[in-house]
Length: 331
Image 1 (tube, rainbow, N blue to C red):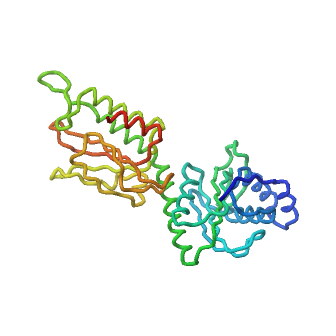
Image 2 (image 1 turned 60 degrees about the vertical axis):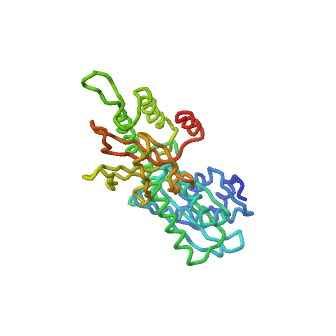
Image 3 (image 1 turned 120 degrees about the vertical axis):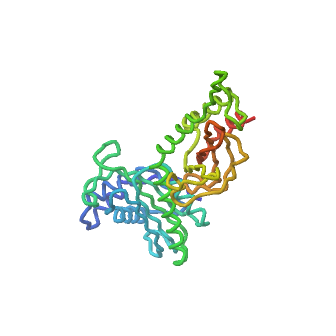
């Protein structure tokens, strides 16, 4: 079981001074910020091991292209300070939400045993991809990069590629979710605007949309619910949009896919008999944030005749507080 550890960086500085390295001063700065966070390990680590880790991490991140998600998975049998066969996983990515928990969940999904892992946020200024300077986190001179270093019990050479492909997909998914976050919120705003009753021109009164069974009060309640979702009550991970075809059947518009749907995650949800606004547990397991089945929130849009012309589907996870709210709302 991995437990938290702190590092005496001063002792590592002394060891680093004894080594003949060209970038010694940069490495010492890197050590300071790399071990500024606790690391988790069940290994009996010594300074020799910790210095090896930080040097290996520095060499790995020393070159990185803009917006690159860099990943290496390697089998190792000669890590200084520890004995045994291990596999190292090194990742560097522009710092963003969901990285660490998504990476750890992916590793565990393959039943791999984690012996050590650390995640450091380092403010790096680069020139032509190479480290030019390392700054304190509070300064704005560089770009904050997440440096993740994981050691697991050794796996077969043939399984290295399998794990690497899985982690590459996870990193791509995290980047898609984070970059599409605001676009998904914009789609939610569009859905909220479509949740309005239709005006009966003859009686000059508001009536519910045909075939929805919605009253104006109920309609407003569900509109408020969509607005409430944005208040940190739902983690938006994916989005799909369906448009009615000539036969009135809904067809997915793949060009509108956002988040996880851009990395190939999709599902079939027969929604013809579902409510105007529905919430259900999908058959899709998220590879971002938490490995669990995602919720799907569907919002239908109608024309003046009450025909469904569009359906927006939002995929993601509710907070525990939100789960209670949903239960109360839909009773």
